[in-house]
Image 1 (cartoon, rainbow, N blue to C red):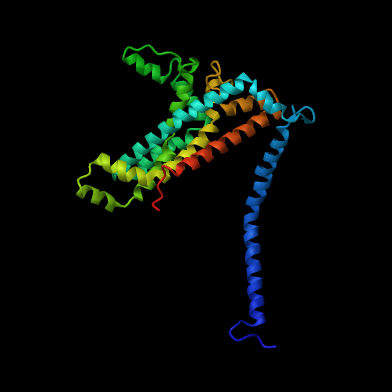
Image 2: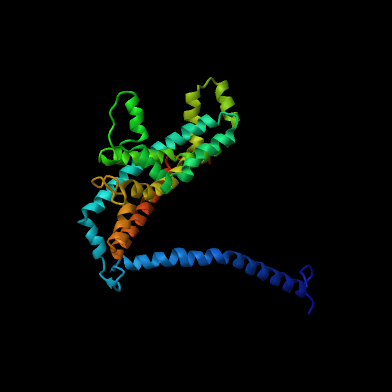
Length: 309
């Protein structure tokens, strides 16, 4: 029977079908390294840690199922609550300050400075190095008893102390370090500022609007999606902060647990006390906390994020 008028012959349809299958096979082959990595490096360890969170496991013996005992144990664990308080304060203070400072620098650089790429690279550099051991060691030297901060204070007749050994100031030095790593959100803010149509500012100037009013009614509303994006990224990153506190406190979270980040407490339970079951439970609580906070951010974003629709 002849093929219907206007339709390709069976041989052409067969060739197209084989071409699609070969393209799909090529696509799956290119994706396979990522899929294998996702399964072996991410999914498998996550499922293993989920199982271990319901066990008593110290590496030396086989895991023993204990149900919800690890999660119930957290309610009476004073150091768990201390680490949650320290981490929450760190996030609540450092993230807004970091974003505000990043936006301020982005506004300055958006004025069309010569050598903008050089400034942009220089300001972005701390974001690449901020979570490194080298910078944490440098920070420890800067705020030490004989550090740069105290030397500067001595010049004006102020007697400084050991900022890292004082429970009232140790955490604030790490907050300053996190604010200093403003480069990544700054570059994103700068890209967002470049996308705001200049015609809006020109129309506002014709109407006699001041710089402050243009910033309030044009820049901020059109930049809210970028603010929201940076807020989510920096919040999640701050909850996962570890290296700075570990290096500065020598892995103890001191003085008096004032720098005991939640991730550092997980590390202590897992690799100091070898309580892998409890450490896995702590890790899953952190994951759920970040998920809930992120969901709250997305829910509240509908009231303040402007997408132009």
